[in-house]
Image 1 (cartoon, helix red, strand yellow):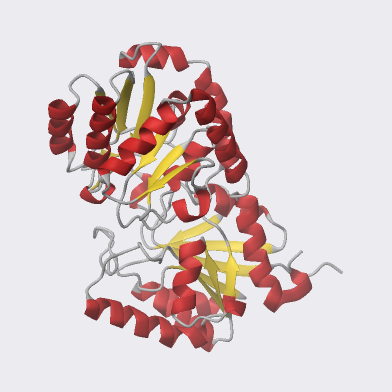
Image 2 (cartoon, rainbow, N blue to C red):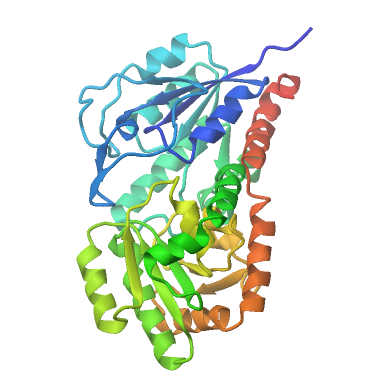
Length: 402
């Protein structure tokens, strides 16, 4: 007799391009019957993204392949935040949905707290996953105390925490969550999808180089992120200029992918420090990004207070060396200093310039580092995510989870 699959409810803010392929894979697993609840579906249409400072439309499918519902809300048109839109009907859906387990992405939204409390009262297994970590935020002392107290109060209600990486696991351990409740479900991207697009992009590599006005002998440094202060793109621009000044023989350009509030300021810094050597290409969707990953010789993420930084996962699929500031969460898992790139202090221009020179001046070593990046990212996959989720479910549902 076949066993009944575990019916799992997942509560998350909105359709997210990185999560959609994973949700489709979970839904296709015969051991799990998944239903996803969104607070809003604003990401499915053209919408204003404050990080990019412009209207954007995501160019990938985010909702097909799994059962989902957008929760009713008191203010459905509100901009997405911790409190808005204010979803209603959560308790009723948990009560009547026939779910065995509840999974929430974050614990601070009222709707997610309602799902956690209701699920716990009804005897369902409750799991949490989010990006909390050493560098995920910089809250006031009062807010930090409130979040700590809230999490400790939730601890008895939680069946498990699905940790995304080293710093995330460390965070929950510090909050008193016992090791038996911590299950690894690492942050990943669709490696197969990216590698397929990268192969396609390679065929047009020289044409893209020509369109950007980059000479055949010039090495390429890449930045790709929202143009926000915490992304610290100006650190990279200044480090690039210092590297070129200290090493006049280095023939390189810096390509900046993205848009946002720092657009004019970063362009001004580039014009003053490296005129003609920094190329701004604007916002690029997911279908366009692989071409830039394929094109570059080294990728840099200089952010501060970066909870994870999935772009690091993405570019490592292109077999590229990477440089990261130490306040980037993913770097503590994906970057092996000296093996596939370099970890530098956030805001340290000299260190960043030195790391750039080490990679750009030694193509053979850079190629070996890129190969190592590809090896490392192979272990950070959706397959591992699903196995981590199923490991957590097996503790409570045994043979129902194959």
